[in-house]
Image 1 (cartoon, rainbow, N blue to C red):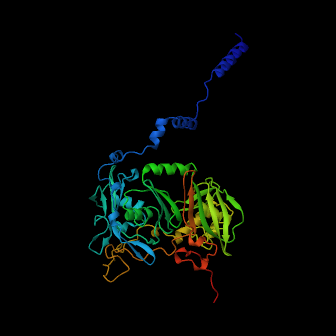
Image 2 (tube, rainbow, N blue to C red):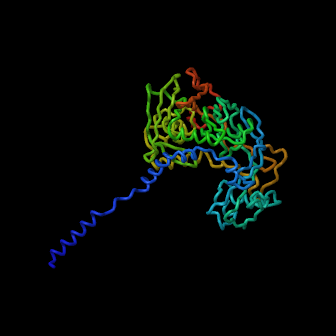
Image 3 (cartoon, helix red, strand yellow):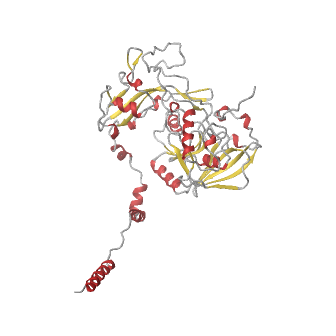
Length: 465
């Protein structure tokens, strides 16, 4: 057989092989999409998805006495002072299952490296020259047993840290009930109070106040920022909570907000579609960025008092701080916004009409750290952190006689609210709205606003003598 004949046979064989090559398999995303569509056509799947898990089944997932089921509402003792809601200090024990990265390390090493709001001295330094503090006093535990500095954390351990908790104050404005039925609370949230326990707040939160005042064991909430006021949907069971979540995520709920911004906002409907990215999770700051998520907000001016404008906002997407960020980007920030407003020392790094660069993001976060130190949101340092500590005198009203922690707030809590209000929520089946806040009126005078609405972080210009 000649060389040419051999080549012809090889080419013919390759051609036959190519013609019988199997079809390209679906990729992972295509398979997942097919399965999802098939599942949605299955009535049994949909029924199971919408069915609430019976309480007895939920309870079987956890052991009796699980620390996550502990009810500590009996420690919530509220009082009102200087137009603020306050809660009396109380003992509280943080508990957590040991994380994988903690295994086979000493409890001192884990706490001193993972929880940097306190120094190593807090855990081991002599307090009042009588005993060692957190560890020797039994404030740190593993599986409810006292530990030493050399105790090793193992898989399955439950870590505890008991503290005498001092919560910051919040607004004293009442929580108004807009609508109530067996499945749902619709409330008018006042500005200046967080929705759920977070950071230094626990009992001073919407959820805990409602639990205490209405004697309700469990509530399911949708989020509003601490300084924002207005409508909130709070489900009374998981079935209604899931229904609201589906309505939210599918865009069925149309939301309208009211805000007050600097300057005269333009006429007509203004649409901002600038993408938003989280710049810092720790500092909870976001801004327009090239790598941000798609975000759309519609704005319309309602009135102008010669200094500031009342604006209606319709967020079409649900990014964190979306309305506040888009207004800043348009050059009309909420007039008393302590984070995105004008006049702060970090406002030059948040430039209207410009997407944030990495260099400005770093400078912004550094500046925010200066003005909002981490200790503002963590437990205050005890007085007894060094060997030179002395016993707190009975007449020292600046420190707690129980735990020696400072009673002088490390953060200015005068401003609690901003001019942003969730006004109306509606779907094709229901609609709820609140009264407009006092600052949304056309004749509102910015100069006479209450102290809790004034931005105390604005840098005052130097006055020549």
